Image (cartoon, rainbow, N blue to C red):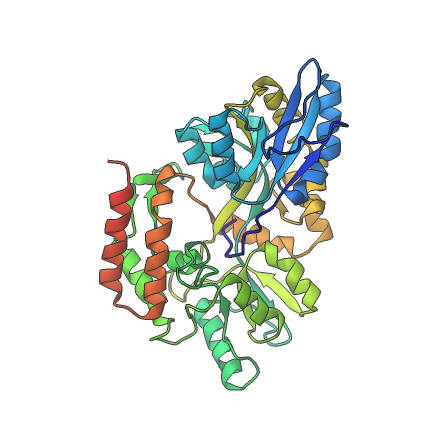
Length: 418
């Protein structure tokens, strides 16, 4: 997920066998004489414990041991570094938009899963983990942006983003709030825009980053940043910025907008499932709905992120890793356990039905995901983030849009493969 949150420089090593994690080396793995060795799985803190009994049972059934290393920051970079050194894991949890880069550099293998088995997953999750016609991951969680609404201030969901702005401004002028909408504009440092959060507005106004290849996949040959429709979309965003209506400001970061919402300073918050716990803990009366689009324009299509399990191509136990991914990671029981460990919308349809019955908020997240678009996993996307973040920042600041778009377009094209 692309959130503007401070990084915590820490790593935690959890062993699923009786063998303790080796000290001194972050990438060290457990040792021990077992027929099939030790299956090393990289996860994060919250999911590591949920994986424990499942990995333990699988390992015991295959005459092996299982070790989980919880990596809490820079997961993709650390994975690449370890893979190069031959000390990487056999299985890794990660975001689906890493796939293009990892495949291009030969760090993950296709998952040997049958197409009909993938029908058990949400369509957006299935599409997200497919690359070049092959499945490169087993999806387990889906996340997208939604609109949190303070129902004590706004009983009904706004039909359009224009209605949302008008309602927020009315409440601000009446002195009931100090901020019309909590919408993340900038990264945590306040010095660069946030493409992930701003994409719903950009897409609603007709902008696009990459075109469609005719099969529902992004087309790297069709960069849309400099297209006239994208210029018009950026003009629309600028009209809400600091020299327009002033409802979008560069000082609005993920943390500051969430704090404004939970303290009652704004009636709306555009964010993801990672803010549910904060909103609930604050005792705010709230409802969740998809982010609305602009009046007379298209829907606001959020980027959809899909957390997945990958099989490392440089792993020491590739056959065992494939068996683990196919036999264990697709189970409803594990999907339920992962959801309980951290409530992100399950990608497995049956697990989603279980979670939906327990949490009515999931219906809104599901609706947002259905209308959203998988975050592009193209390697070319790495060229987009920096220039486009700068473009958004500039537009909200109030700089002339057309030259800023042209600058971003040139910067992106200069980084794309020739």
